[in-house]
Every structure is written in C-alpha cells, then in structure tokens.
Amino acid sequence: MYRGKAREVLKGIEVGDRINVKKGDRVFEGLLMPRSELGDENHIVIKLDTGYNVGINVKKIKIKRIKKATPPKKTKDRAVKFKDLPDVTIIGTGGTIASKIDYKTGAVHPSFTTSELTNAIPELNDLANIKTKLLFNILSENMTPEYWKDIARAVAAELNSGASGVVVAHGTDTMAYTSAALSFMLKNLKKPVALAGSQRSSDRPSSDSSLNLVSAVKVALSDIGEVVVVMHGSSSDDYCLIHRGTKVRKMHSSRRDAFGSVNAAPIGRVKDVVIIDRDYRERGSGKVTVDDKLDENVALVKIYPGIKSEVLDYCIDRYNGIVLEGTGLGHVPENLLPSIKSAKKKGVPVVMTTQTLYGRVDMKVYSTGRELLSMGVISGMDMLPEVAYVKLMHVLGSTKDLDEVKRMMQTNIAGEIEETTAF
Image 1 (cartoon, helix red, strand yellow):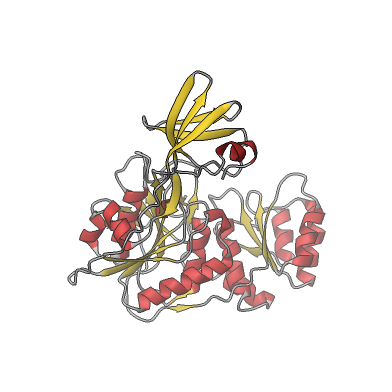
Image 2 (image 1 turned 135 degrees about the vertical axis):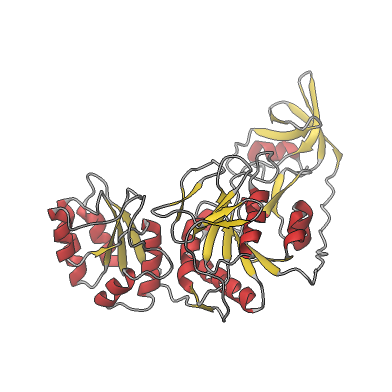
C-alpha cells in the first residue's frame, strides 16, 4: 500500500508491524497502518497506543521494527442449529455491512461467516437459524447486471431449499437497482427477500449495521412475499422502514435514514416486531424460478438544458432501448424531437420518466408531450428512472416488438406502478 519514498524508507517493514519512528527530537511508537492507494508517497501512518493515528513525513526519519505483525487467526464457523427456529439465509455481496475492522492493521476485511455475524450480533441467534453465504465481495458502485443474475439464482436456491426468507447484504449506493432487478427476475416469489446495508461501518459508535441486519432478518420471517429494502427509518436507532423493492431510492449520501419510498408509502416498519402499514404481497408456497434474460444494452439519459441531439443520436445508434429522465411531466427540448422520431424508425423503444422523482409522467398536458406520444415514446408513468431502466432490460430480454414492449412496460409486474400517486 506504500509506494515511492515511503516504501524505500520502510525497507521491508509491513503493515501491522509495531515500529519505532524517530523524527528530530520526537519519537513515535505504534502499529504501521495501511494507506489508500491514492495516498501520497511522502508520509507513513501509525496508530499510537492512545488509539489515534498520526501521519509522519518520511523526510529525515529513522524507523526500527519492534515486533512483526501476527497474522490474524482464521475464524472457524461454529454455527449451532436450533431445530425449533426457522431458517434464514444471509447472502453477502459486499459493502460496509459485511465487513469488520482488523485493529492490528486498520484494514477492512469481509466478516461473513455465521459465527462472525452471530458473535457480533447475538440477537440473531434468538430469531432464526442463521446461514451465511458470501456470494462475492465488491464495492456497490461495481455492481453489474451479471451480478444481479448471480444474486437472483442464489436467492432462489436458498428459498427452494427451505429457507423461510433471505436477507441480501448489499452496499447502499446501488442497492435500489439490485432490489428492482430481483423484483423483476424472481418469479412466483412467495417468501420475503430483504436487502439491507449500512451507512456507517461497524467500528463506529454510530453504526447502523446491527439494527438494519436484525430488522431485515425479522422481515425475512414475516408474512411478506416480495422483495423489499430494510433500512433505518430515522437518524436514531429506534426503527427501520420496509420499502418495496421497486419504489425505493437512496435519498442522502451519508445519513443513516438515507432511504425513502418514492410515490408510495413504505410497506411497514420494524421496531420490536414487524408492523405492516399498507398492502403487500403475502407469503405463500411454491417454487421460485429465475427469469434472468436481460438485455443489458439499455441507456439511461438525463435531459438537461442545452443537451445536444448528438447525445441521443449516439445512444439510438448503439443501444437497444433508452430510458429518458425528462423534465417536469415528461418533456425534452424540441431539438431532440427529430432524434426521437428516428428511434421509432430504427425499432429502438424510448421510455419517458421524470427527473422530479415525485409525481408521474403525463405527456398529454402540453404540446411537446403529445408530440412525443405521437412518436411512440412510452410513458413510464410513476416509475423511478432507475426502475424503468432495469425493467426495460428485463422486457427487452423477452421481446423486441415495440407494441409488446410498450404493453409490458406499462403493466405492473412487481409493484413498480401505482394507479394513483398520493405523494
């Protein structure tokens, strides 16, 4: 992790080693900490015995290793199965919720064996027989449609093997995309699939990981039979909200109550128990199947003042479908109309959503909207742009016929379309 001048000064000393650093008249002693790959080459960082980190310029310093780092012991999974409790599988995909801090090195590592989770959150053992499966460990921003397919198959396999419900531990940044994808791909879903993440890492006093994970497991045992997202409902540790997987968005970059339902109320809350506040698909029986035929060649384009027609022309020539984040009720500037007209001729479906998020598309109100409708633009109704983007992948995986694409896009599959918008 160290490079350049810092690497030369360290001369074989590794992260986690206890070192003595002398710089001028001052002497520092502590553990050598890792640096970001983007960190400069002129400093090293050590953790003092006080617990604080200090950065030291490597110019004119003397370093001596006092003790070599001891490799961390591997945790043996000793999960105990309690026969009178239901089974819940927690599938890990990465993100803050599935990690722990190694205080010897300061590095973040996956923490996803059953024993690691239940030792960290003993309450889980009182709720269910917990089984864990680390599917992969990636940063949320690196999520792709191929990973969605892997998650969908893993969820179906666990549910069909007898799990009462499944929790998917996921990074928060793209969790709403994944929840939408699972909502469309998991067919005949009659058990709960709850996605949960964490805004704050588990080593921080303000971490939200424990409450979110416990609440998600409670939802996985509930009567809900659909894909949901379970995250903090307030900035305090008092309750979590249950958001429908096709109606949820990350609304804040850092707050613990970052997630909100858009154009719909949350399905319910989790306090000590699961409290249902609105209609939902109920738990049932039957084998879950996976429809993972996705056409990944779909573009999501935001409309903005001054947008050039070349932007849309480029997408029409290279993509099989386009979702627009239009302005207001679903509009684009008039310079884009010829491009949109050519999309229909080339058999490329264009779906209109609104960048206002709240409210719904209505292209019958103004002349621009009516012209767009005459060109074959498909109203996304009250779908979120990212949900329409995922749904268009799903639809184009089954058909390229424009009339059928329109019918399927405007058919409510997984609660993504509300008949009326109350918000």
